[in-house]
Length: 340
Image 1 (tube, rainbow, N blue to C red):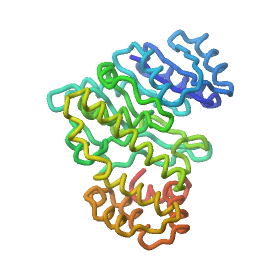
Image 2: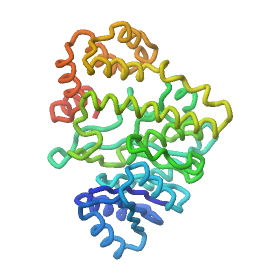
Image 3: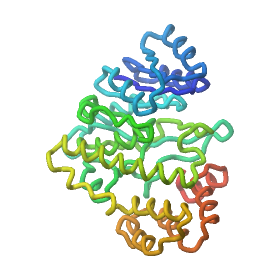
Image 4: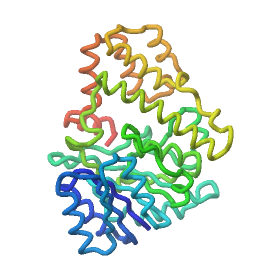
């Protein structure tokens, strides 16, 4: 059993991360840590731990981005199960034990090939920022999810890297991730795995997810550059996933809906035009709002979309910052709504 950790300039967090790996109720056979060209003290911290604990394997490489580093880590892991973890996050003591138990539990007559679970968000000043991801009813998707993914043109699993674990054969079937710096490794892994194997769900927070200034998801906000980058990423991901589907079964790529028939991509197109100063394309906006993807989306997504109808551009950007940012008021509201 392997733990795969990616580190870029997280030396200040790496010790706590590794301590949590070493304190597991079921010990990992190896802990592979890829230092992706860090310029802080990450290399020194990693070498210190590797010199004291033989299960920790240190790999240093020039900075290539999160996907390239993930490819290196996954290729170096020799375990039949690989648990993923970001270097700024912390594992609960029973994480490995519960992941292995979930992989042994049959689903629909088959053993699952991968696992996802809850995380507890926290920061240096707030120990409890709520659970993530949020699923209506509190139950994450489980079992064979390919049909659901094809219908929605997206993976129903919303977990980030530190809440994922995979059997080796699933990772081998996926193959190397697209290493473009704009791509998200967890999105690639979740979506491709959906078409390869059943997923197991653990309804307990087995990782503490650190929210800080350097987090990819911390205080995200709407900007034209962000929208352009997200739209470009969607196109690249679409091409990568179609290639993955063709590997699984020739002709399977045709089952994945074109981008122009995906509500989320149409929304990004509308936002890019609007934030570029072209004004509201009301015809495109109505197409987004009437799209089945929008009608079937969670209520909070629909509320966000409808905000673009009544708000001027500057107000909508401020509204988006409030929605996607992280603050104690939102945490209290999430608890009030029963979402962590």
